[in-house]
Image (cartoon, rainbow, N blue to C red):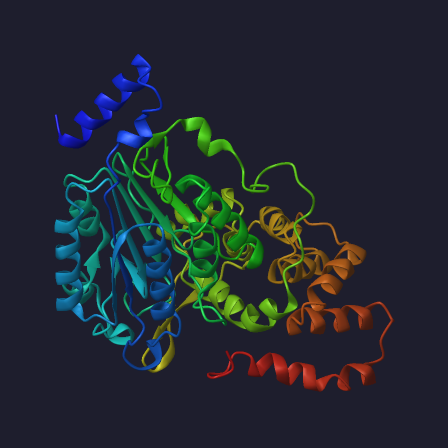
Amino acid sequence: MTRRHFIQSLASFAAGAGFGSLSAQALAAPAHKVALAVGNADYIGPERLKNPVADATLTAATLRKLGFQTSLVTDRNTAQFKADLEAFGQAARGADIALFFYAGHGIAVENINYLLAVDQQLATATSLNLKRQGISLRWVESLLRQGTGVSVIVVDACRNPLLRGMPQQGMAPAPRAARGMLTFYATAPGALARDGTGVNSDFSGVFNRYLGRSELSLKQIVEATQRDVSAQTGDTQVPWVNSGLIGDVRLASSEQAGLALPVQAAAANVGRTRGGIDAPPPAVPVRFWNDNLAQLEEQVYLAVMNFDINSKAVLEQRAAAGDVMALTILGSVYSANGAPKTRITRSAYGLEAQSTVKDKSVAPVDPPRAVGYLARAAERRFPLAQTLLAELLIEGPRGVSRDLQRAENLLQDAAATGYARAQMDLLDLNMRRGKLQPQQLLDNRELFQKYIESFQPGKR
């Protein structure tokens, strides 16, 4: 029996025997809590990020206020990053709680997630050198399983675009978490996490807002962060959790940190959680759409062009959880024609195309199925899905009834966000219905130019 367990047992005996005001909380040894926060931003060339250093710095400051012995390191090369993690693995042995926070680039290679040091050249990376140089998340997990009570890994990564030769974008689904370990990802498997337009990323800003609230348990922090990030990004970025935690744990309270709480403690909601019977979701600020719509449209396009049997399972998993990006991608896939397609990747020289043959058995043309996926995303007021669904309702392909009024309603809502494609489709629809003259369409040529420019380098 360890000294800590002996003291806890003695405290329980004393409380049961009625030893005056002596309590378990008074006798229990202070929880031993350690943390490492890493922020990698200074990558080579165009892969440089803006916010990871600020994200890691903010998280380190929050954890120190919670009583964690916290190390903060930034812009680490491969050798430094590995040394940092090995030292942290040693410090975590015997700790009640060990928390590792990472902000920077991440990638999946053959379904193994890697965190990338700043000396990794992403634009010309291959699977082989990523395996050699990347920091495997499985290795990080193994370091924290050695004698640690509760292990928490928070990964604000997957901000990178598709890389040449990579099997998928973002990070892969994680295997079942080890007992006592919780891994919290900024976004869903195979998806991207935005760097953010403010001081911090969308995820890290919200995560720290709840991390610093001492009355919340770990699972409450996770649930509240999932809800708010999803709402703020119009469900285009849905944080993902992989938990092997039994019960719950409180990170902040000096009396309870590191001690298991009853499972029921995690059930107390912080506001409303996603999936409950609730009012319609609040409208996403127009500024978010202005900053991100062109990038989101490109992500959908790239995912559709690179759709295969491997990405299908991941997208279906995300779609089942209500991820509007996954729903929109699948809707686009099933509405596409069966002609040979082009696989699109991003390299140091920009977007590159390679002709491939579409596997019709993976995603046969199925317009009604496409409508089903797009309708679910459109219900969340996602402009891309609203626009794509409206286009199907206007054209009325096999199995889909034309509905011009519903299409107009969808396009009006999407156009109000500033989405140029929806605005152009609305102009076209109004002209078809006799509500707009051809000259009025020409008067909006600036709109066409704006839409084209949104895909040019430097416009996002």
